[in-house]
Length: 253
Image (cartoon, rainbow, N blue to C red; front, side):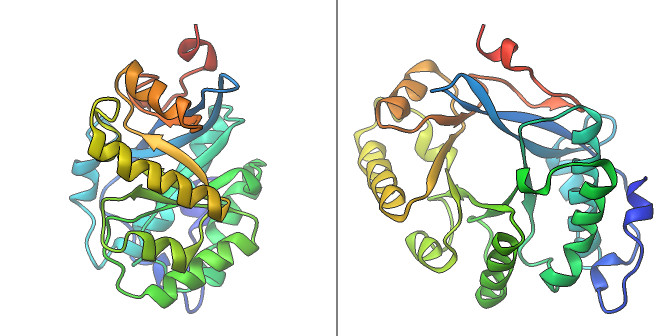
């Protein structure tokens, strides 16, 4: 089943039109569990079909096609993940200002997963904390609905955006991803250490898991591991692989 077949128009759901005038695909970057030496998840990162970066793809997204783009991201990332034989969790970024009504528009995600036998409980939806939320009440509704449907939810780039800890209080995700700007050089930066220790303590009190993203050197990874954070992502472990999956053996050799 193709993405176009899954994205058939549904009455009342304006995300399904119009069709996009550009094409895109994905690269997948692993999120590793350093404690168990395994791949916890792969994050789907948009790319042009000739390997262009995310900025090229997002440069084609505007108010008129944002809804369709958000839906096609979900469908394409799931279909490709299944084709590649992904067994770990799949992390998909979603655009909070693009989702019209979650109970209507989640149908395309479910149809895509079911059409290829991809376990929907393995899907993580990430929302960017760095993106200004136009309708916080709507986002809370989306998060609650996704959790009800069995999806994992995550806040990406935590610590870099508009709402900070208020965002956590309102939306209560399963995971938070500490922004790479706080991760970079954390092993030698006392200010960042103090901030991130506070985030770690807060997350633990709330029962949330933490992912440190943007790990580039071993001392950064070691700092987080020493502070009980074992889910790590970054170039130190593996770069995103264009239409492919970096195997566990390539990371922990």
